Image (cartoon, rainbow, N blue to C red; front, side, top):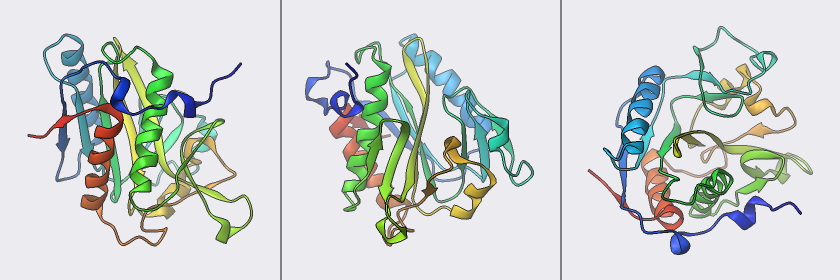
Length: 234
């Protein structure tokens, strides 16, 4: 019998006691190789007990990343933006201004050592965040991420509003999620996002919401605590 990710997601009521997670928001663009180097160092520090868990919210300059399952044929325009090979799971994705990237460095050794459940929790976090803006985000069993139905575009049409790609080392997670707040959606046309050709991409602003990054961050922070537990801010 298969178990859907819906049954795996939960709020923090049944989590073991863990210290508050550090919550950090960068105010300027972060270079992608620098972000990867920072995550590698922080994951090692968390695994050795020398640093607390961390959620790190950033924006990147326009770029494409290729996950461990990336198919070269999905890179439609290799010359548009820099392309970075990365150790996260998944295929090609776009990062750029107007998109909130949250790098989630949590110790699953304290949280149940269940990677599949962790992915379901990330989806749940995003769905709850979208619900704060009265948007119904949905998960799909055959594709990771969060999706929004677009009946105004036609029957069965849905767009991706948030992506998930993670890596785990010594039971500490890194990489994480990206939520489209107000990116230039045309920039996604240089790749086949996550290898999915049947559906498009959307954003909070594309759906008609007058929100900015600060609004999104407030919702992400509130719903993170619901799903994963308390945070601490600098």
